[in-house]
Amino acid sequence: MNFENTLSFAQAQDEADQLRHFRSDFLFPNHNGKDFIYLCGNSLGLQPKVAHQVLERQLNNWANYAVEGWFDGNEPWMFYHKELKKLMAPIVGALPAEVCPMNTLTVNLHLLMVSFYQPKGKRFKIIMEGGAFPSDQYAIESQVRFHGFDPKEAIIEVFPREGEEILRTDDIVAQIKDNAGEIALVLFGGINYYTGQWYDMEAITKAGHEIGAVVGWDLAHAAGNVPVKLHDWGVDFACWCSYKYQNSGPGGISGIFVHEKHFNNTGLNRFAGWWGYQESNRFKMEKGFVPEAGADGWQVSCTQVMPMALYHASLQIFERAGFIESLRSKSITLTQYLEFVINEVNINLDFEQYKIITPNNPKDRGAQLSIIAQRNGKQIFDGLMANHVLGDWREPDVIRLSPVPLYNSYEDVYMAGQVLLQVSKDVLT
Ligand SMILES: *Cc1c(COP(=O)(O)O)cnc(C)c1O
Image (cartoon, rainbow, N blue to C red; front, side, top):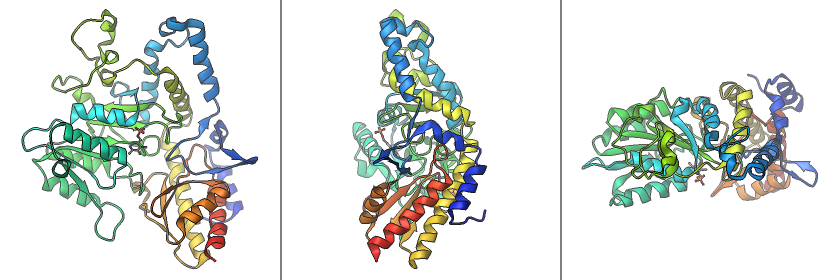
């Protein structure tokens, strides 16, 4: 598409956008009577307007039914999570039985590693991307220590080549092959939080399986952002948070995926709790843990109704938007437009002040662009904030901006470019 750096072009794009009305389902942060241009859905998605109502409904259920709310009313809590499973499955390309909402992301990463990181003899290593999100680094490090290994020996990190910012699939695959026989687990983030690179999940999953390793994915930045096919790709397990691209609110419920090929595997370790117990017999309260079939068998504690109600409401918005395919198609163009607009800022400034490190091929990225500000980055970022453009800052010099197809417009992107140009001129000249 031929983009233009004009308000009229942006507005014409919005006019033609079938998904534009979803914007009015969300609340934008507002300061001094003026809405922010919100480009930070990679960190915390916006609040759906129905959130209040949804919470109030559950508060009323609690008030009216108290403990009977588990069984009574129009949405009894006992099986409430099943409503979510149906809507989560199409977001990550899974069967409903393969997914379950529970806990929070890092907790689930630990629980799934308990099951799927089973070092044996020489096969004890985990391969991951260098520069992974810190929580994942700490989780993996502590898991290998828990099994008695030294992280320096047991963790292989794949880094970009000298002078490059992003990983080459060939290099990842080569390192997996080079360490065949020693790798127990391949565990990457679907999209890297810092660079915005979307890894070739299918190729990496295949390479891991070819050497006999288990393959898991942290989809914090991928779920609800890009289409993934966890079932078809044969991914062993995955987990994600729902408060980034899925708008479930701060600390919102996490989701897990366990491939159905593992449903009958009785050799998997688990850190069990009563809610993972076989559903039909759970309340016999008997000794000896028997897991429920499917992903539900990984549940530990009873249903977190409030955060699940928020996630449910948000998933219903995705359902109305046709889940992920149409959103993705808008997302590709919207992010390309942001790329174009940032390049226009460089052209206007007459030097490459902004260098985008996120891959430029849409197949290698989601909504987010990570932009190195060559000079005075933090000052420029603060200037954006002061002028109602909200992205986020990652040390030492990266501004992350993510136009989200559910609630961002082409006009948002155009205006962000105008503000960036003005702030850059103010700060740099
Ligand atoms: C956002 C994010 C997390 C956050 O973990 P919580 O347990 O929800 O705090 C973890 N890992 C990755 C890759 C993330 O992007």
